[in-house]
Structures are given as C-alpha cells and as structure tokens.
Length: 387
Ligand SMILES: Nc1ncnc2c1ncn2[C@@H]1O[C@H](COP(=O)(O)OP(=O)(O)OP(=O)(O)O)[C@@H](O)[C@H]1O
Image: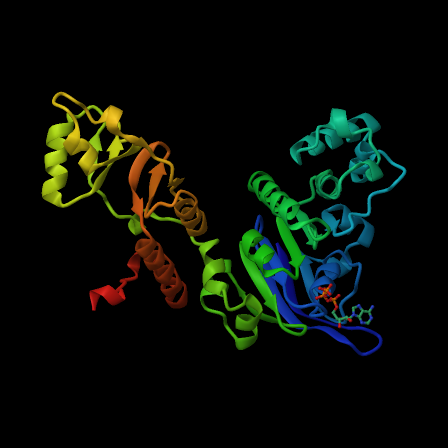
C-alpha cells in the first residue's frame, strides 16, 4: 500500500536524512518508525504526502508514484496527525473536524454530520464538545480531535507523527489503547513515527528501527525484542527487552498446565479423597459446562461435614485472564492478587493455569520461534530443572 523504493533525501545543506530506504507497509497494517532523534523518521513520513520531496528513489501509494500526483489531491487521501495537532483556534471542534470533508466539497450539513460521527468514534460527545474551541479542551481531548479530523474524509492512509507525544504517560497509554481499538475497526494503512520504543512495540504490527538515515531492522515487535538484528537495535530497545517482550507475547493454549478440577455440585468428601491421592493442595472449581467458578483448598474440602458439596466451600477466582491476553497482563494479575498462578479462560470456559515457570517457558519458546521462524508450539523447551 505504501512502498518505498531506494528513497534518499539529502537536504540542501548536505545533510543526508534518509539513505536508500526500501520497505513496504501492507494495506491495513500499522507500521511504527522508531529511532533516536534526528535519524530521519519525520523526513521519511513527510515524503509520503509530499511535504518533503525525495532526492532519489520513488514512493508508491496504492501502486501510484506520489511524485505524479498533485500534492493537494494526494493529501486529501492521506490523513495526517501531528504532535501539536494544529487545530484552528478560532473554529469550533466540530468545524475543525469537518475541515477536510468541507475542503473536498461536501455539503456543510453532511460534513458536520460526518464530523459529529467521528468525534463520537474517538470518545468525544459531539453535543458536549462540538461547539467548544480548542483552548477549552484538555491535551488528550485535543489529540482525539486531531485523530478525528484526520479520519473525517475516510482516507485509506494515515500518517501519524508523534501523535500522542504531547500528553502525560497515563493519558498517552489511554489514547494509544483507544486508537488501537479504533484501528481494529477502521483498518487504515498507518505509518506512525515515535522515538519511544514502548509506544512502537505497543502500537506496531511491525516496527522499523532506524539507525542514521537507514532501517536497521524491520520486523514484528516480538522479533525485534526477541532477536535484535544489530548491536544498535539491541542498545535502542534496551537491556529490559525481555520484560518489554512480555507485553507483546500472548497466552496460548499450549502454555497452560492442567490443575486438578472439581465440580461445583460435587460432594466434598470424595473430591477431598481424590485431591489427597493426587497430592494436590488445591483444585480449580468449574460449573457443569466447564465454566470457571473459583478454586478450593484440599484441606477445606477434607474438613467439610458430611453431605457438604464443593460449591459453598469454593473461593472466588480473582487472578484470571482471557486466552490471547499478554503475558505481561497475566504476570500483573499474579502480582496483584499475590497468587502463584493465574487461570486462563476462553469466554467463560476454563482452559488451564499459567504459573511463573510456565510463563517463563512461554516467553523463551516465543523467542526461539521468532529466531528460527517457526510457530511457537513447535519449539521444544528444556528448563534447568529438567537437566
Ligand atoms: N530542512 C532541513 N535542512 C537540513 N537538515 C534537515 C532539515 N530537516 C531535517 N534535517 C536533518 O535531517 C536529519 C533527519 O531529521 P528528521 O526530522 O527526519 O529526524 P527524526 O528522526 O524525525 O528526528 P526527531 O525524532 O528529533 O523528530 C536530522 O539530522 C535533521 O537535522
């Protein structure tokens, strides 16, 4: 969808900002460009909508060489979000959002209706915020208007230059998550510039890690964190890349262990016997359809009076995550609830548990899988304790 072919940019003063760059962003993909200040990220992005012209090479958007397209027409097909948003201070939020539809000749009522729809989509009630002016918004709200405005004419391509840079870390994470949820439905082809590796990892389907004017590695976040291609990439992603990788590695069924199970409506006494003979100190309690209910300690079952069933003795399961959650979230749940394991569910159905050792194993297998280019469930794992 966006294709760079041997693109270079040398500024008139002789600075080589971009040097022989070739890469492609697939349709509906979000690619983050990340690297230290001055490495050429913004130059790369601004060549796509012709705010900067390359010195050599060509850039194709949807198969069309951008140098052959009138820049104004080109920019109508490419949404652009920048750090300081650039809203018109004397226009209402609604009119700011309707800017591009109005420019491309939509009737005022239709442009405003579209703007209201977009404001709603980015979480701003148009009835409340539509008539305000930019100065009457918080930084995070202004950023949302910037995103709504860029999406208003429904461009297939979105360029975002440090779009969440001007807000504090908490708001930033919130906006990132909101944008990811939005992107899951609108599926734009997005190029996002950031100098923040955490943001690149969280947002990107793939990441381009820049050295000076060149891409050092172009791969999925997991692969970049698991197997940095060069020393420079390794230094940039940081010594804690294993921890960062927790945030991009998901829980899969093969990662899980099957603990002893007891049924909610089963009598306590035989359940206690079963657990004792298995040497288990606790069991997961499931409902009749295999749905997760809670957990119960073996000694509580053993002390229960005759005729007791498991149900009233069970404790609520606090530490659980859905299948597909990140390992970071699973680990977070364990820490928050001071639990040695976390239950994993698919919908309401109980699938198994993850322990710290299994979590480590899942992480190691995913690193191996990326290094060898094979699926994670094909990686055999031997831990120190097997030796
Ligand atoms: N108009 C210009 N004239 C000369 N040099 C320029 C010009 N614009 C940018 N540069 C230089 O080109 C290089 C790349 O700049 P660019 O803005 O693309 O980097 P960046 O990676 O986006 O940096 P940052 O994260 O700081 O925004 C830098 O050395 C910069 O000083």
